[in-house]
Figure 1 (cartoon, helix red, strand yellow):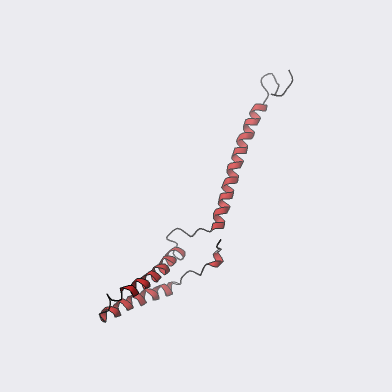
Figure 2: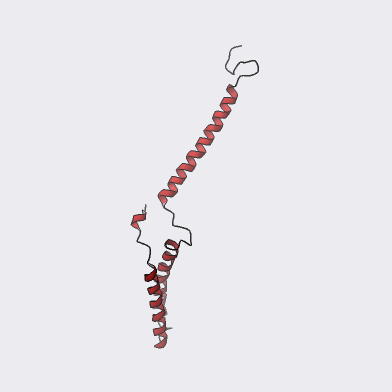
Length: 114
């Protein structure tokens, strides 16, 4: 199970910007040298690395996508939801039990002597 402290810090905006500009400069340089199409494998690797950084930035810094769910928080919510459901079931059962124990019009309960 992973804890929040086990994760690396979110990417810095300046670092993400620098990586984007570096890729743009690399593409421009390769094109000027006539090597752009031959460098596709290199560009795909760089794009893959940059894509991970961009996704991490988008999720963790801007929070535009769904936040990363902490497994401990999810488990805690499940426990609370289950406890509430059991509490409602018990209340229903107790309500039915009380209805059975209510005295009838004669003033005797279910277990009373006649």
